[in-house]
Image (cartoon, rainbow, N blue to C red; front, side, top):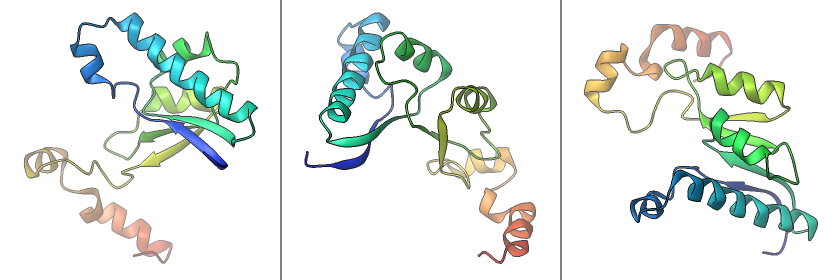
Length: 139
């Protein structure tokens, strides 16, 4: 790596194969801590300026907090939209100075027709969302 402004650790649950091989939750916590430690080293070596995480819950952040040398992470990127407001993690991040970066802000990208119908339709098609966009001159 030459130099980057930010490096992010994605999805704490992303190592499903690791867990399927019989590794415990404690092993997963250690793996996340080891990955974060490598990103901290990149900061100390001047290779990046900030580190962040993605899809971390309060539980994941609290476990990370116990071993982190650089705390808090600069950002936690999470799926965030009216159908999935994630108030607990948003509040936690606010209280700990962690920027929340939303993805899929107009609804989950992988939801099928059945899910959309259950929720009341795609957000992008909802009158309320279209009214807000119109009010702000956005399409």
